[in-house]
Image (cartoon, rainbow over all chains, first blue to last red; front, side):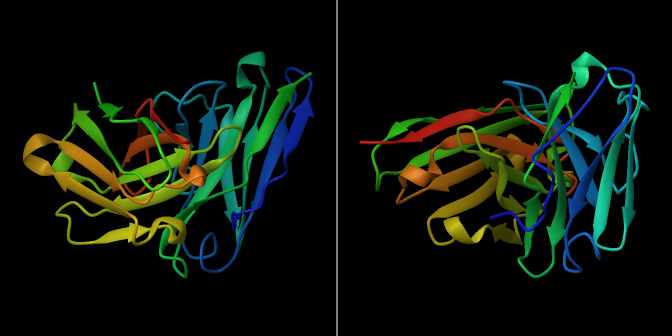
Length: 110
Length: 115
């Protein structure tokens, strides 16, 4: 059972903006960096955002991350069909002494 | 090019053992924490274990403590996961991943625990 909670799914039309929430606690998001991953169907996950809001080289700037208190968010602007994937937040948890992933959110482009 | 290649997966009976390997290339392996992450069929991602650069610190998810052992050989640029007393719920794709940010992933190796 994951300690980071995400909505199971979000959907939006092409060129629109979607936001995915990730709710945690003081032992994880509240005290550690949040990372976000994109997993395309049948593929390995890929790092999308690190240290709350930083983009790795090569990742489109249509993706952005933010954090406030014990919650984090991933925004995707200018939604494209290629963005259809599962998205996971993650953070180190000081109480569990482990890296925890969110429950995952499936993004559908209508 | 930074690359992680897992191997060692397969079909094993409940109670059996398996050793996964991960070959790293394209970066200074000895400078990074390394992790194993798994994904059961149709399920989300689950972090399994990680290990410090020199192997002096190791952390495990509760469900594998006492059964799995993570290790590394910096001279061989390799990461390992020894899995004992395997259960059906350990069935998953196992990914090798780099760093505390888990920023680079391998393609994964499939472990199936079934009689």
